[in-house]
Length: 170
Ligand SMILES: CC(C)(COP(=O)(O)OP(=O)(O)OC[C@H]1O[C@@H](n2cnc3c(N)ncnc32)[C@H](O)[C@@H]1OP(=O)(O)O)[C@@H](O)C(=O)NCCC(=O)NCCS
Image (cartoon, rainbow, N blue to C red; front, side, top):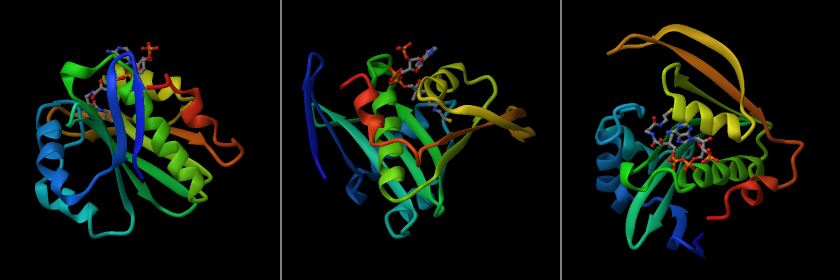
């Protein structure tokens, strides 16, 4: 599905990723030190497995960001979200999370969860803004550098498609 949102920042598209987007996904991953880093084969698997859902934000024909969600049945996991450094602070991350919440809800998910480095203030603020609640900690979960993971969870089943509308309206 393609959705065109034409606002003050120009023409922005939100769409599902396709295999041809792989180089853009890898480039965004490699340029974001705090993102979850996957090897190319893991990204390729997203396009053959039923569970991986990748949504992109496109501006002026460039992939500016992506979000990856995993369908685990009644729960979904947000595995990664990245926005290109040059286009941050313009609501793209917020929009991507909103899209993934709406998708999970539309597929019958009851809740969406994720884990994030404790030091990742921008991502934690983004998730909090969307109403995710801190729900646990995994000590020394991350390596290089070693750090605790914080778990966040948001119940989505009771809401009625508000996720996207509540976003910044990109
Ligand atoms: C986290 C990330 C995706 C946010 O993307 P973004 O497009 O810049 O975020 P938005 O502009 O949509 O911001 C939405 C909200 O997130 C929070 N936020 C985003 N960047 C922030 C920052 N640098 N400091 C504090 N809060 C921040 C704010 O609450 C913001 O709302 P506000 O503008 O009303 O204050 C982006 O910083 C990124 O790609 N980081 C590197 C990859 C990464 O660490 N991903 C998380 C993996 S778990």
